[in-house]
Image 1 (cartoon, one colour):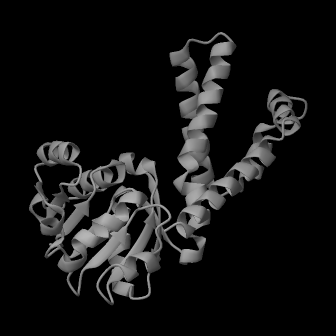
Image 2 (cartoon, one colour):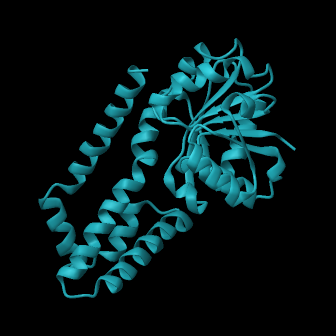
Amino acid sequence: MTRIAILGAGVMGGSLLSALLRSGHDPADLVLSERMVATTRELAEKYAVRSAPVGEAARGADIVVLAVKPQDMPGLLAEIHETIGSDTLVISVAAGISTEYLENRLPANTGVVRVMPNTPAQVDQGMSVLSGGRHCTTEHLAEAEQLLSTFGRVLVLDEKHQNAATAISGSGPAYIFYVTEAMIEAGVLLGLPRSTASELVVQTLFGAATMIRETGEHPSILREQVSSPGGTSVAALRALEDHRVRAAFLTAIEAAARRAEELSEGE
């Protein structure tokens, strides 16, 4: 079985760990680093996996997952530089950190894969976008894809598209949660109990997303099917257009992409 070291016990590190165990990975082949001592020990005890200092965790691992915040990456790379083997695959889930940056701070010819996951990975509905570095082989990409597919869907793209993917799927859950919150508040404003409004909104969003996936229809077609002439949906959509909500979303997602680019440039 492949030995995997997860360096970082935050949301993504913990999500990957739990997904690997649910998929049948042997706990004996998983190790967490002790950079975040309290959180790491809590996860290690919860899932009965081993924890170790960073260098020890990385040493001998077939795959090393870098799951720390971007600002913590320089220190982490310095710690593991001497422990990365010639055949080790390094997978980074840190936003804005390029494969070139990682390759320049790891042993020569290290295979590196950059990943942009998102938080629905916590419920096995994640969207992960993978990009391989200069020394990344087809086998490396396949390994990374198999690993990330344990908690959702995976798409392989050229690295030049990573900022766009960050703006769409990486930050995307925040937009959906924002809209969900607004719809629930509208229900409360209209006199519904908050719990009832929440159930109505969440199931409606889930059902709508499922329709898009399963029917394969363009969202505009599905929207038209709901929008009877002179009906309630048309009245609501007219109000959204009057408030330039579509334009606001375009502007917001462009802003997210620009920020992702700024983070990359500030490596």
